[in-house]
View 1 (cartoon, helix red, strand yellow):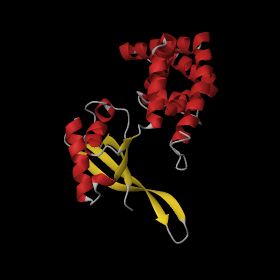
View 2: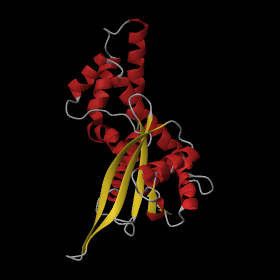
View 3: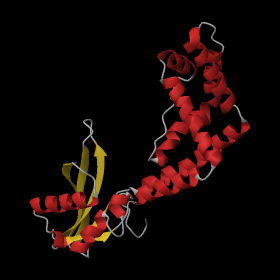
Length: 253
């Protein structure tokens, strides 16, 4: 292997330290069989003290040197669409390009898809209101063991889930229970709303919140939004998985 590309991502660990994941891609050539294959190897985690453009670029260069991977042989770099990574004038990709102009930058297609959908949804008041109610349903049931027991007694197979802030394709998991079992969720809310054993200020609040949520999920606009968004997210989920498939090439993406 001579030429290679790097794929980087980051995530905080349980101790809240940002960990940078380094992956390299290269083409393995079998000259005898006249065959080639694309390989992808995980090289490790690198803890980051800062996530500034300069610090991350320096860290990448340092890691490549330690692994004896000459940056002059770097032919590609791929990151998410964070401003510190893709900035045209001062981003990490630009700093790497300043050192090696042949290190072509390709943004993460799956993350780009998420950003497009996020911006499109945030432009629509009905969409933001719909997802607010979906999140409220999850928070309401999951924040109390008693409410959760009531929920599972009505709906033992599907469970409500929180909305992902970044991965829109995974939001279909939060919509699915409402799409197929809305009636049972509505019945669970009504059971809590009509539970006279819930007394005191907390009990009264729980009952009134259940009644308000039951009224919200029973509205025609909400029911229509469930069907529309489930179909949209179903297609987004398929597209996102295709963009992350192992056998996908840049031309198809």
